[in-house]
Image 1 (cartoon, rainbow, N blue to C red):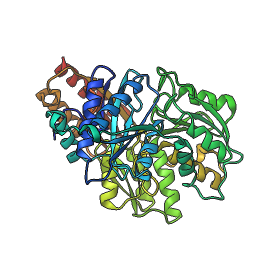
Image 2: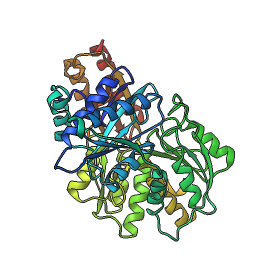
Image 3: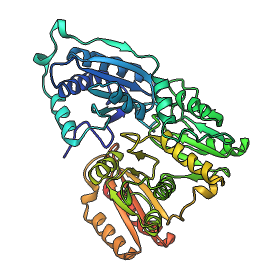
Image 4: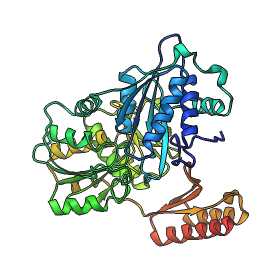
Length: 447
C-alpha cells in the first residue's frame, strides 16, 4: 500500500515543515472520527517527549480531537510504552504519542495506538489517511457535544509501578551500580526513580531536557557518553534509552556496547530455561545478525524474520503466538507485559539475569559472536534508483559472490529518502566490497 502520511512508525518529519499545526489538527479530527464507535463519551490519551515542538503539536491535536467530540487526557512527557499502557488502563478509545523517537529535536512525529494499546494496522492507517484528504466540516461535533481536555496527575507513578511488577517481587537490584542515559527525553523522570525504588545505585545522565537537547550526543543512538560514564564511575552496567524510551542499548562494565540482538539472545535463553517462552522461538527482523539465528538454533529455538519495523514484529508475534521479539536497534517487545517496544522493561529483564547469575555484564550479555555486518545509506532526491539496470546488475552480482555464505538486504527507508544497503557474511573484506559496489551503483543512479 502506498501511503502519503504514515511511515513505518507513525507520521514523522520536520516540525513546522511536514508536521505543522494544521496537519496535527487534521490528524486529531481524522483519528477521532475513525475511532468513534458507539454512543459513549469517547476519550483519547495524549503523551509526548521533551521536544520544543511538542507544545505546538499537542495543543493542535487537542483542538482536533475536541472538535469532533472526543475528550482529551493529557499526561505530558511519558515514554511511548507508558502511553500505550495508559491508553488501555484508562479505557480510552485512542492513544497518541507525540515523538520522533531517536531523531533530533528539529523533527517530531505522531504515533497512534488503538484502545488495547497496540499500534494501528495498515488498514486503519489507510482509513485515517482517506479522512485527512476529505472535507469533514459536516462531521464536526455540535456545539453542545464538543470535547473537553484535562491534565492527568499521577501517571508517572502508574508506569513506575507497572515496570516494577515485571520483575519477581523478591528480586532486588541491590549491589548494582547502574548508569542510565535517558536521552534528555520522555523517560527522564520515571526510569531513574524506578531503578532507585528497585534498590540500584543509580547514576542518571541525559535527564535535563531543555526542548533542544533530546538525543543530542546521548541516548541509544549516541552511547559514547554512557560508555565513558560507566568506566568513570566503575559501574556494573549502563542503560541507554532513546527519546521516547521504546528502545534500549546496554553498555557493559568495560564500556562496550550490547545491541538488541544480544539482548534478545539473553532474554530468550533465560525464558527458555524458566519455561516462559510461549513458543520455541522468537521474532526479529531481516536486520538481525545471522549469529543470533545460529545461536538460537543451537538452543533449539527458531528465529522468525519480518520486515523492518517493530509493528511488523508485533504483528507476527500475535499471529504466531510468540511472546518475545524485537529489533537489532533495541526495540524489544515482551508481549506478556507490553503492547509495544519498552526499552526500560527489556533492560529490567536483562538486569534480572545479571542478578541471578551473579556474573559481569560482559559475560552475561555476550551470547554469540556476530558475523561481520556492513550497513551503508544512500540518500536520493527522487525517482526510483532501485529500478536502475546497473543497480539491479550490481545486486545480482553481489548475491552470486556471497553464494550462500552471507546475506544481502537492500531496502528503501520508511521514514526518509534513503536506501539502506546491508551485507552480512563470514568474510568481512568480501562483504565490504559487495556493499561498496552496490552503493556506488546506487549513487550513480541517484545522481
